[in-house]
Image (cartoon, rainbow, N blue to C red; front, side):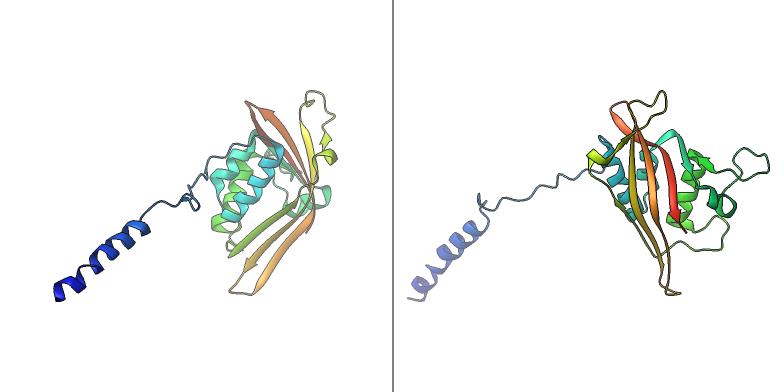
Length: 195
């Protein structure tokens, strides 16, 4: 008699386990289709990846956004404050190139300021207000007919938890983007920020 009362339990358990392990066509498993490859297929994608590089502090992503002849250009009021002598003539220049930009940004992401006075921030946010494409400009310079200029209002925040301090920069940056080999790159980043 005891044998009979336990017998129905096993088929019910087996049926329950079988049903629980079945594939549900109304709730399929989600496949991870994310991709770490930075493609930069459009100027918009480049600028979105710029925000991503900052939020992830990923210098490798950052480097894929810059053209090899990249230039970061300062407004004249900032040259004496943060300009560097790029061409070794003893005068601070209003621009720097790819190598300096990668070094400075790498320091920002991981080491802090180049002069050692500032540690890397605990939190780093770059937010771009990317205008609609109809508000983008074309570069009037000869040879730049296929370039686009995207003026973006930006907000950069560096947070330091130990000192409970915040460094901000905001203003407008003009990104001159150029196509090459079915990708887009930042050729010039003209900073018009307020420090």
